[in-house]
Image (cartoon, rainbow, N blue to C red; front, side, top):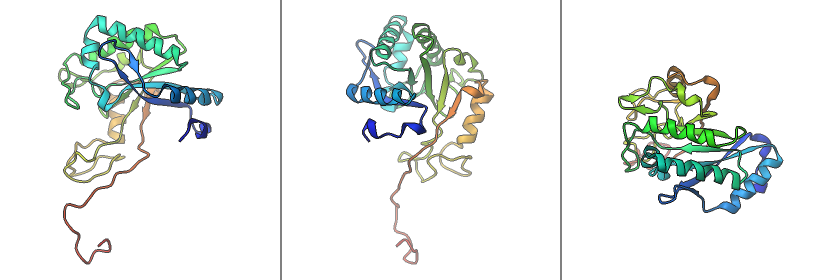
Length: 237
């Protein structure tokens, strides 16, 4: 949909995804700068705020090594600050999937989450107070050396809010079909029993402020192909 055709009256914030981290300069890079400019122009006319999302499932590879190195971290922070200013953005969303976990072939570090906190604090210190920082997070709190952290309240300092990805619980990677975004845990399922409700509880139990939690909803569905033909008597063939 062209940016000029979006109904901005239904929106308060837009995350423009994704910018990727250049592994040499540690600058956020984007291939659709002209489209981003159009989104910002139209959104601001309707008092809608725009942030760039950095990372994503396939773009989170550079985060762990960068966050662990003070020099690389500093370069990323400075480059991100300049990116926000250059594109007249209202904030930045860090979509690191996921600190402390091996995902998409990239091994996590035990100190990923503590390094991430330091990265966020440094980014907060470099951005104007009017700019916000958010993070896309999974259905359980950030991982420490022993699994999900029991106390993530320190992250509420630099973060304006988190966006909990309470979806993609079942998908093409699953051995059986199941709900993409279950509201309550699936009993007897083949994936971990996580859901919208368990995610909200996990983050509040880990002492993250309720008023800084945005729960993500899936506005899409998934289809599956049956492994074997259904009975002839079935109305579905």
